Length: 120
Image 1: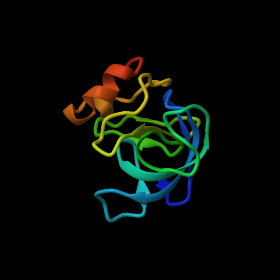
Image 2: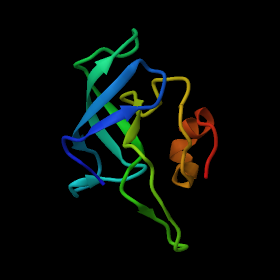
Image 3: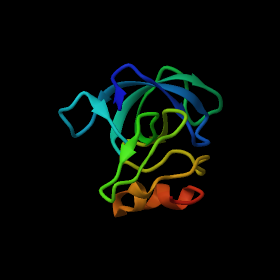
């Protein structure tokens, strides 16, 4: 559960380090979960792909709040993190530096799935 105003660690090599959630896409709820697209403001950045102060789309890949699956299992991560997306929905970076959960097996996230290490 990522509320509006939460800070996320960016886990790709786009150059951004920390981003703050300022809005949600495609849902009327107050919280974002794994696999949800959010609007973020870049707070800290190094490099040329992304600069601090810009607004980007991002997909949430890790949450501290436990995620429950239909088979009865649940899991949680030690941090809240995201991967930055372009306006068309493609990832900005060329590498994802974290494990991805099984929720990214969907065809929509095929590009992020190939950039990540593995699915669990």
